[in-house]
Image (cartoon, rainbow, N blue to C red; front, side, top):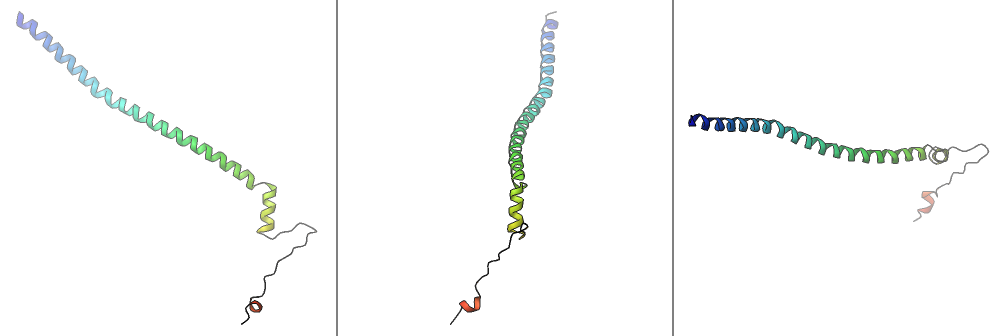
Length: 102
């Protein structure tokens, strides 16, 4: 009868150990996955904040570029357009042959 009582605690201990190891092998990878996903979430939130700030700067730049004053400046400087009643004055460069006397 003593041998039977001695075997039961050993079997129970082995069974508990097996269950504990099974749980350990199933829980640890999931905990690591959750940790990795949380780390990735933080990185993505930082990228989102940075992109939102960059988007704000680009929106401000677009509103400045599309302003009537800027459009008029581009039309005058790059396209050579003038308003009604204005006279266009084109500066002349000095003649290269007359300045290059020997």
